[in-house]
Figure 1 (cartoon, rainbow, N blue to C red):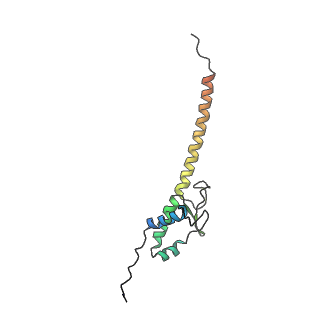
Figure 2 (figure 1 turned 90 degrees about the vertical axis):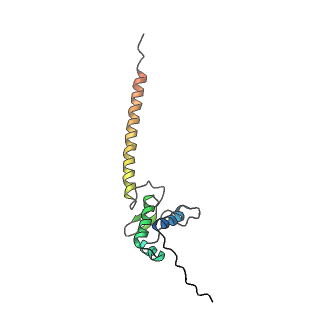
Figure 3 (figure 1 turned 120 degrees about the vertical axis):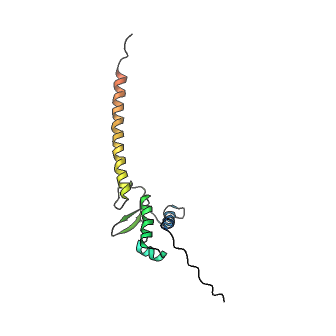
Length: 131
């Protein structure tokens, strides 16, 4: 009977954990759908044999990508892609700021479009100078 010592599995990095869950959320063999709750960070850290900060960092990467959101006291959930980024509670502050900025840009472009339409109507209604 061979009693060779077990080789310990290397502990995953935050990047590797994020990649695993990204695949489980977006891959063809999807395990999580919009609204599904991900494992609690503390329990997942214990299961994987990593520090809590490692799992929190992995979840942070996924949140920054807009794949998940965290609701304090409730947990971490797969984000519904039909809901505009940055509008749901627990979304990344970066996405909330980006959504607000994009809304401002959208409004400014709309106003500029209206001004351009008015200018084109004015120019189009002028009669050409006579020779």
